[in-house]
Image (cartoon, rainbow, N blue to C red; front, side):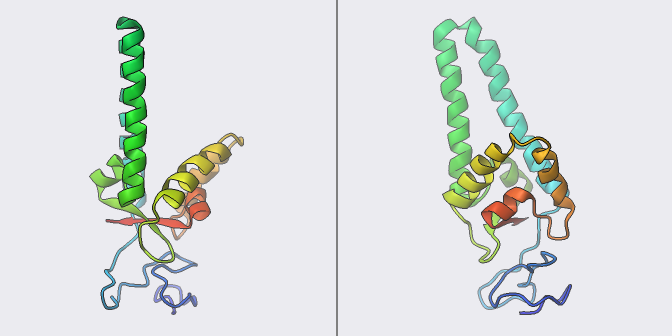
Amino acid sequence: MECPNCHTDNVEGARFCASCGSSLTSAGGPGIPSVGLADRGSRLGAAIIDGIIFLVAVVLLAVLGPALAVIGSVLGGLGFIAIIIYQMVLLTKDGQTLGKKALGIRIVKRDTGENGGFVPNVLLRLFVNGLLGFIPFYGLLDILLIFRGDRRCIHDMIAGTQVVKA
């Protein structure tokens, strides 16, 4: 299948061009919806929203924990863990965090356009990428790759995913 944008040959049935990331389904095959890549601003906004959610949880834990002694610390810790688990469930089920839902974007498998589930969306994109974050300047490099034509960062390439408009 040839990309209408850059004319690269792609695997038959691919939803996005392997070279430039353009949607190959915009012509619309039977039963295949036309989707576009999420813009960089939406991805940044979703990351900021998710960061604020975690920041609020950490601040509440820090403020309420000492004030309520041991019970407050335990409740705050359980609340923080609940937020993490809830975000992981959303990523597994829908390919979206709360921030991604708010901004109308989602994670899909690049080759099929379907939700990848737990392994790509949580295990590879979050945990493996998080471990790689211990490498100096890795996080900066990961973020800067959003400026590629296909808007895929290192964590997208590791997981074989792409972020698209929901």
